[in-house]
Length: 126
Image (tube, rainbow, N blue to C red):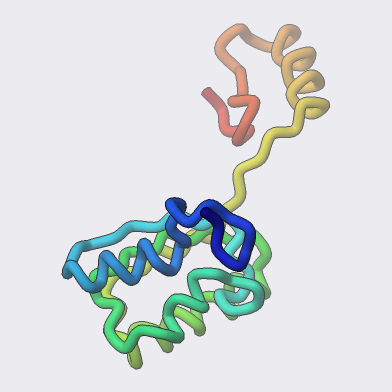
């Protein structure tokens, strides 16, 4: 059995899951990497449009681009003022994996110190 989007009907949509959490008065936490401006093409923004009180939602949103992050902050300020959003966690950060950079870092570290290494994912020193 499938719905109109050709997905099995037993797989709930993100909107359905979040709406059910609100209906049950449960706290929900979401993690979003690449939040952009908090509106354009954002399935979480679509969710906020359909609910007047999102006070039990705790979004964790990471956006590395400064201009987008500034707009994201404004979007979530509006959610706080108009939708009772209590605790957004907006992070101006990025994590990535760059294999070529890691190879160069490892070669450099072999010449420096065995203690000077970087995480291959986030490039922070270990």
